[in-house]
Length: 201
Image (tube, rainbow, N blue to C red; front, side):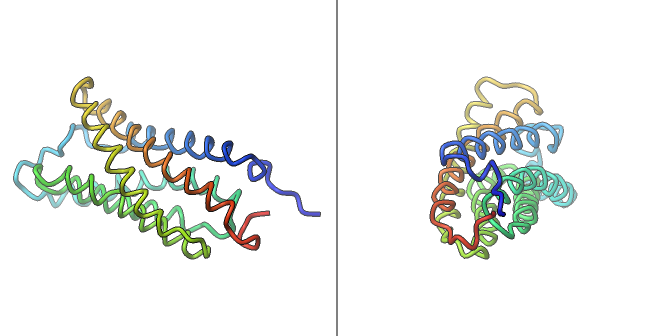
């Protein structure tokens, strides 16, 4: 007798809400836990900061581990063989953090706004692609949502928030909300269209 996960039997709106809620919480946690004691931009002036490249990669890797592990727990309720999700999230966010923390101030935020979501989208898409899921659109949706969310988060942060840690939490929460809503909507479509042999049981 095969007993399906209770989570996998939720209606699509339920799966969307759980994915979005868990992801936003994860983004908020990493915004609080894994950042430099400084605001935006990274205070490098006009210089490239080699030390920040290494430290940023470590912080971004831990960021990806937290977000990716919580999301992977949910994905395993719906799909088989998504272990690569954790590594993809960790590597993608390590690269994003390293770039953003090391670049000169005039370049750091624009590059992270544009490249961060694309790197994350490509890494996660490679996992979904290995599951024979049509997820190419994931890259575009993640990139656009990341850019929009981070841009809005930075705007709100600069207007109403003081203190480097609170700034990071606000920017991370709003970015996470935008990315989670976009990817959650796509996951609902993927769950409904995935071949039966790829679904968890």
